[in-house]
Image 1 (cartoon, rainbow, N blue to C red):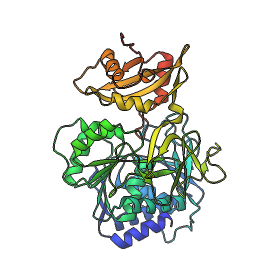
Image 2: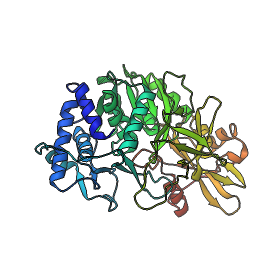
Image 3: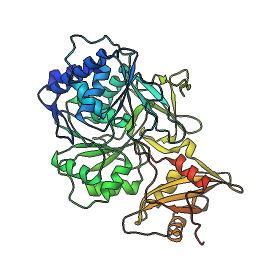
Image 4: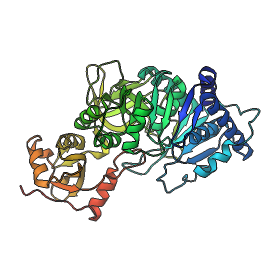
Length: 461
């Protein structure tokens, strides 16, 4: 299946049902979305865009963005969605770049009589990796990969036409485009878009629109957990992914939202590989079992490897893809599989701290510190040390109105962690540096430690 076929099928099945609602007041049906996406394709064709081209989109979430995204693929080109925070427009990969001001004119074009023929192997989307541990790379995804995986995810999560999905994630990111826009198109669900995430606004829309399913990143859950109020009335469950979710934050979010918070695991190069989906019993800490059509294994060194139709076609910048001859993608994450086939992520391979010859997984230290009542968020990184090789540094965001000290948090850690894993330095910040997808940029923290712009405090004992 191609995106064009998905759009046509959705319009045929649910034509007059509302598909997308946004902050600007739009409420477009599936049929209207198809018609406007076709107009966008016509406008792009008139500008010389066709198969083999790439079109960059740089705009906030909106119904117009959805139609433009779909229109690019209908024209046979590949979408290159860009974060609003990006400074490099398209890294020289796009033939055309469109901003928010361009979208209205794009959708006002006259409909086109015919669309170019595309196949499963045609590129549909190019996504930049998060770049949390290095430079971002452009991962290419074909129509066949995108759509087969969307259908497999739909089978796994069990959403249907009566569901309502909150689109607080940026559609410029893989998590948002796949688990909000494309998943809803596949099952006939309604999408409620937020132009930008705001905790109070998100909570209001969850309740007003009777949202049943919310894909989110942990930073969003931390933000809504800090806002008082009643739980949304219709929310069935939340899918958290994109970054580690500490158990303590999971429980706080569940108490605030009145529903289960479950985890999934994926990456730009392969999207979702596992999901802890209902109706199976929820397992806090696990990222679930493999999505239909996906295989997961653990390499000898503990690295998670995945294989399936969801794996990217490669990087467009010439970087060799981390895929072996058998089709197994090396994810860069360390994990384990339990006896029931559930995956548990231990940490990022590149985030591993080796202190005095001992392996320290930052996520384990973060999980402990996150349970302290004064801690809202925490990131643990390694700082080069002449004696130990690396020293453990905890960077902490305090909860509103709280002011934990380095001595208090160090004592808290000592009571719960072996000596080799205890943070030896702490830094306090107002917010952690985040990428466009909401992941903590640990490389930025390591750089700040290296250049002295992130002051730390050593506990007195």
